[in-house]
Image (tube, rainbow, N blue to C red):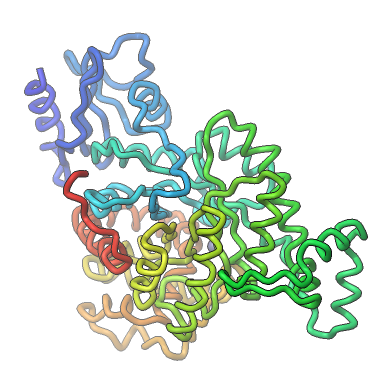
Length: 487
Ligand SMILES: [Zn+2]
């Protein structure tokens, strides 16, 4: 009886001041009934009718089993409910990446996405983020799946092994069920020397047969419909810049993606580098991959201007629009999506992104969900905010080794000059945002701060959800991901 499960869950949740029953999570599958709730400071699943063939583990309470939202129970629910497993999204469906560094944000993310024509990519962490947060790919996926369960989300979601650079890490993410791999080519990208003799010498490092093929294929090629023309110099520069990345993509595709035994979305990331991806370079890479039989789902070029973490776009908006237009035309030509990385808070370019791509695009965000957590702490727990702020200042220089940002400490108002009520205003200033953004690993590494942070976010769980839902909705509205009444 559905009613019994709801009354039992309410009784358990009501003992916790921040307790809640997630009505949308109610599911019946065969003889098994399930309902998610928050009690005793954590997410749990109340299950009725699970037999020994199901591998749920929890505490017996009369007819029910009260199960922690942990890894083992996540696997049990994955086995029972196919829609709780991540799936490949393909080339046509719009998608949006929602990285969740703390493992607390994906539920609110789903509330933002609900009713819109796009597929969320919930588990999305780079190796850098895993290292800095001391989490594993399994932990990240656990959190995403529990968010799916709580929200009763049945419309599919992706899980992105983000910015992976080698076969071993990719195999690991795939073995855990990740449905998308973002291949980070940054270590294989080489900025061509500006000096022509040095450039020629770099070019001649490539094997002769490769050079001859590239020259024969591309020198003198013009594609007026895409506005592309390849001179001898252009071809040499692209070959120097991208040959190794193309080879890496082939290796990864043939050793990992194609042999995964299920559809996997492969994204090629050319963005984490200092040099802009020219439309010619994009076309060249895509053409080489297509000829080799490599199928990618999306491509992240490095655009003109700067996509720094946690703040708006820096650069000329119309130049960006022209650049995006050219890259989108190339992506359309080959049939995949353009991917925009570091999409957090890029409010001034969102409408161009939506209009130019017709929303057939992938956009990634992550840091902004962490910053909204810091905003809630600034609003609700001023003393803790002050500790975090001081700790961030202490570690900023170390954090710059991981992220390129312009944050200028001298422009951040001294903490002691601000009243408690003014603290949230730091979250509206670029320098302070970047300070708080890139130092997350150092906040989480300190065991005492880590505990205080999670305790505060548990206490203010609803406030965090509310802030986050609104903030992500601003992103989605800006791009133009409309609400679809049929979903
Ligand atoms: Zn990136």
